Image (cartoon, rainbow, N blue to C red; front, side, top):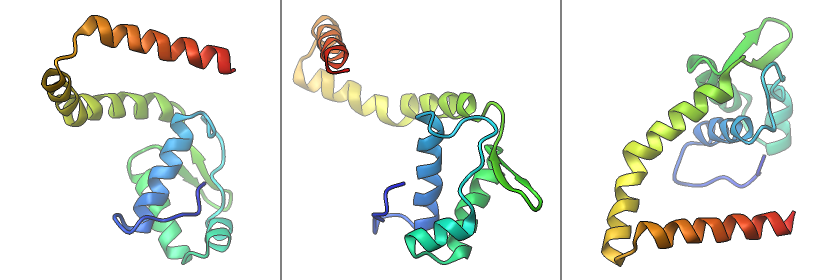
Length: 127
């Protein structure tokens, strides 16, 4: 996790978002344990209650489960649920702005698809 915190969002929310990103990127998978509240608090010099609040949001969303005396673990299907939710959020919140920008710049679908293909090809050669 990145130790830099933004002033724009509460730290507990940023912590929650970082764990979500780790699940989406496959760093944390179904059944994996989250780093302990104490370890995260010590490593990033946070109040343990702040870490716990961020983790509790993940529990409340059904992405993580608490196992008494053992810690918190990624629920089965968490990544699949997150992908579904994030895709819908993108389509509802971000896509209208992207479409407006595309129209404002006079771009067409063909040139955009060509750009996507070129970007994907460049990514393949860098691996």
